[in-house]
Amino acid sequence: MTDLIKRLCLLNGTSGREDEVRNFIINEIKDYADSLSVDNLGNLIVFKKGRKRAKNKIMLDAHMDEVAFMITCINSDGTLSFESVGGINTAVMTGIPVSVGKDKISGVIGVLPIHLTPKDKKQDLPSKSSLCIDIGAASYEEARKVVSPGDCAYFDSDFVQFGDGYLKSKALDDRAGCAMLIALIKEELEYDAYFTFSAGEEVGYGAAGAAAFTVKPDYAIVCETTTAADLAGVDENKKVCRLKCGGAVSFMDRRTVYSKDMFDLALDTANKLGIPAQPKTMVAGGNNAGHIHKTAGGIKTVTVSVPCRYLHSPSCVVSVDDVYSSLNLVRALIGELADA
Image (cartoon, rainbow, N blue to C red):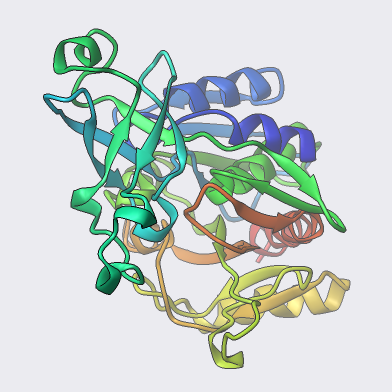
């Protein structure tokens, strides 16, 4: 599982640019899936037969895209102006290395050094509009040879294992969820199931809803990564969820109020089977459940998320134990819902 997550995270693929990730997933699962197709929005839709036919149609979803940057302009001095693709805090942009374009040109998001910052501004974050990507080009003409507006830049971040089973990387949101789905497809499932590796979640354009309309499941399970704030100085009621406590089950976020019976079923199933799990205890963010549950006449949906510190940064951190706990819970929920 750790190796699979590593290989997924080191791929580049932001919203609308998921090709590299999708091609990798297809290569991983093509010998295990009974059917697979790619729709007009770039979603990968997979069907896997189980030992038993499911009474209810089950769909599992994970999104392929990661937060990144899109080049908007090449400046006269050879630097690159950019816009973020998805929500990225300016605090994690300053001074970081990035890779730019299809040739993965090395660059850095430059920031005025503290020595030149006015005294009354030293504690302020720079505005995002003041930041540029420096690729070492001396002029517009030089930069234009290797980069074009519309190209993307990605966090240039190593994958690191550290501590007691912790993983650090970019793109753990939601390559951890993709890894869970790949692992399930490679298993001998008890029941038939559909899997959607969806596009564009980070910008909220709802491609997962189109995939769900194609599948028309009775139940959907969204496999996600969500903010863990189990850090010093954070109030207990704002920690959201914690690493090493299992998958986080949502009761409400900014896009979805989840059915109480689905929320209860997830936590009751975890408790019954001794699988570590926890409620996501803050109403924040959103995920593909917001689009899926309103599709095709309405789909009962539950979200199980791997807790992740420092989300949407070059240094996302998860516990591999939580990935396995989330995977075990999702596998159990397939059985509960398929025969409900």
